[in-house]
Amino acid sequence: MTVLQAKNGGENTRFARVDRHRNSDSEVVGLVLLVNGSPDSREAIERYLYFEYIRPHGRARNPIDLFTRLAGSVRAGRHASRVGAQYEAIGGGRALNLLIKEQALALRRGVAARIGRQGDARVESYVVAHFGFAPVRSTLAAMGRDGVTQAILVPHFPQYSDIMTGVAFRQWHRAVTAVGDHRWTTRLLTEFATAPGYIQAVNDRVQQGLQRFPRHLRGDVHLLFVARGAPVSDVQNGDPYCCQLQQSMNGVLNLLGTANPYSLAFLRHGKRHQWMVPRVRDAVRALAAMKRPLLAVPLDLVTDQLDTAFNLDIEMRRIAGTHEIRHFQVTSGINCHPLFIAGLSDRIAELVEGDSATGPDVSWMNGVPGLHRPQIVCPRRVVGNDDSPAVCSTCCFAPTAAYEPEKKPSISAMGSTRLEEGQSRLYRS
Picture 1: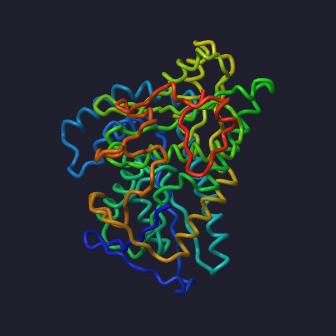
Picture 2: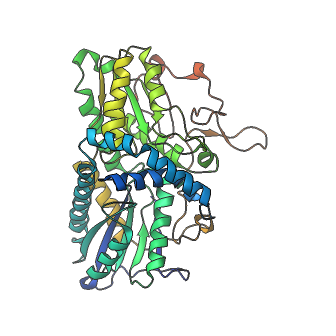
Picture 3: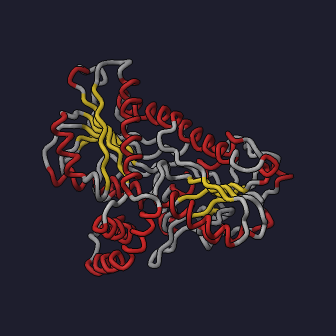
């Protein structure tokens, strides 16, 4: 977890240290959940798709060019009907947004209970979505009316990625700068990829999912961990998303302690940007040859969304049936799982009650104060004997990686999914 605190004031943003012993009677903590949200109307669907299509370009320091915006608008209009039908198939976007609101309220109660041990600080929760039900400006206005003195930004993404977490923080900062004067300090929770509560909640969902299979098949169920993915160029340029996914997956496998085969696949892909592979649909087709039961485990989604409710539970189930995979299940979303709420509330309370921290140079973040990429050591990265840069010798995400199938560990060699400290595995058949 990376903790940074900054005094928000437009271009004159400065780091500040907050006195943890100050009068708690005037303390109002604003818990801000940064989410994608789900569209609940035809117009909202087009805006949602437009944002998704231009998102990869939102990482750049320069403004998004007119051609990219026009192309995104055309594509959004073309695909709105298809995506709208997908949302109708799962009951619409309102139900998904309700899950997010319920999670925000649960976190508010959890944080309030923990802060209350030290004082009488009041906690308010807010949700900020890129479109639809929770726009940034209305949230900022509500925070001002509530007298917020400290804002805690919590992205809805366990693993940090420039294309998700980074873009969300940038948009927040731009909105705050545009609004102008406000009186709260801000702290950022940039990731919680290895937080015990998150790992325990995912593990619990996996165990629940395994119970849906006949008893005699549970040991053979293939665990297909699923993530949204990111552009390969981001990973090659130091984005920790790939490494943190690996750490999260290893944490779940360690806790699970079974010998089930497993692999990792990705939902998103792009035309102008090469994304991480393999895609989920390709992985399902490849696994069909093994004739094993399959359990899909969303790894970087902490509430049910279109990616889980439709793309996995409907579309991938259809593909699995087409390829004669007789037993296919998808784990339930984390949502308000008590272990997740308790663990994340602990991390947020640490931000509220702890001292401020400073980090390395943040100039790469396009002027967003108080934010830098989490600095971690990739568990799969090795350095050659010469002066060449570090390369991932076992990573199958980047097409140029030196991934040799014959080096995949077998069940007989590995025994169980429990790993020694610092050890990592990507694939087991």
